[in-house]
Amino acid sequence: MLTFVDEILLLMLDDEKGSFLPIRESTMGYVLAGAVLMDLAFANRIDTDPNQLMVLDKTPIGHSPHDRILENIATSNETRDTKAWIETISREAGEIRDQSLASLVDTGILESQEEKFLWVFRARRYPTIDGRAEREVKLRITGVLLSDETPDPKDVAIICLADACNILRDVFSEREISRIRPRIDQIRKLDLIGREVSGAIQEIEQAIMAAMTHAHH
Amino acid sequence: MMNIGEEKADSVVIVAIEGRVDGLTAPELENRISEIVDRGDVQVLLNCAGMTYVSSAGLRIFLTGARKCQQNGGKLMICSLQPDCKSVIETSGFHTVIDCHDTREAALAAAS
Image 1 (cartoon, one colour):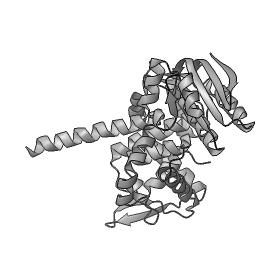
Image 2 (cartoon, helix red, strand yellow):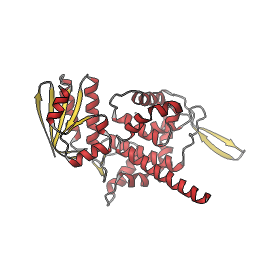
Image 3 (cartoon, helix red, strand yellow):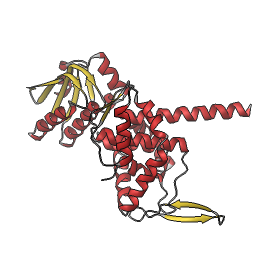
Image 4 (tube, chains in turn green, purple):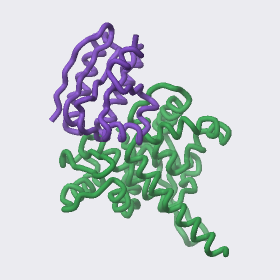
């Protein structure tokens, strides 16, 4: 079964080119950190409220970055809120991403290709060879956003992550997104971890905008 | 700690929640709502007058329960939230997907 990390990475990849959609590194870090916490929350290992993130059960879930992060949270001496943990975990985004990609290659969903450019630099691409999993995720997202039905919490979580890194534009046209924006805004509030991911990304974007404006003047 | 009481008013099953609904207690509430819907009672009112705390895990169970009721042609409602819990529900927008009422009477009136 795919984790939230797996699912959001599939959505972040351009299926044919196998490269990542243009997403700022800090944004990807926060989104992957949020995805790890969602995986732990849905496995009943952690729980959250607006003030703190709590460990319910330290039993590993069988995914190495997740289990190491769970152990870190469980052994931490200080009580921290979800946003603080998202910021901490985002520093490990590279490893989280690489392990998930390796798992998606192992299960035959992606293929790993290395290409050289400018004869020297190497880049790894991950074209999709079995698109069923990604199609299923996109179907779940469209099913929720194009209806008024009460959403499944798992669908809420993936929509929060997809909206936070602005990749719903790969699922819907700009016009459709404008039309369903009220529904997206309604859904993305429903998950506390997702809300904190969006908040952290917004703060970074505002800081970048402020710095650019300052530099311009 | 959480206690769950249950009574029926016409076609509505009222589930009275007392205590904390968190990651430890939420599964019990989920099972109870599931049992109620599975036996054919699809109008469910969660009376939260005695609920002192709700975490994300608790909110997820509210959503799962509401979805299950809706899929079976019914509805899940919430009533009598204490101020702290009401604030959590409103901040997270749950009141936009689940009908919340100030009192049990208002909820039952809306259901009839």
